[in-house]
Image: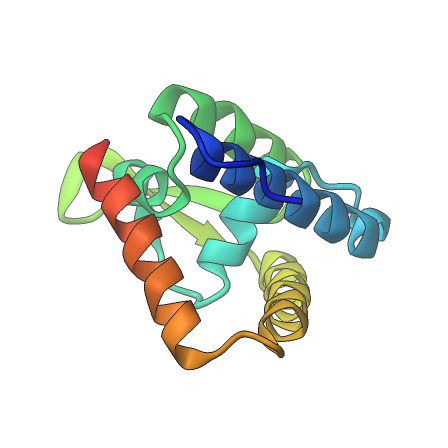
Length: 142
């Protein structure tokens, strides 16, 4: 249930939806033994593209300092590697390992299934409105 009208009702509803989504993904992917932050990183990296820490922080909406500990755990689990960026030897690129690619694909499939299920009864107009709201909230706080 969405809170009644008033200051913050939309934010509280988004917060509740985020937690419900994370709970469902954690349940579906419990066998992987990953945290929601790790699932977020792998879901974003499922396209197979290497990224700098800064790019990945932006893609996952995670502070770089927080992302570093997530990447440490993923590297320890053998799912990602850090390699020097050949274009800037002061920076690293984060890439999926072969095993990381498999796990990331499973994460992306679960995310896609959850999204399709949730949006089955949502009109295109309602979806466009939701996307406009989330974009406005994101851009207002960059």
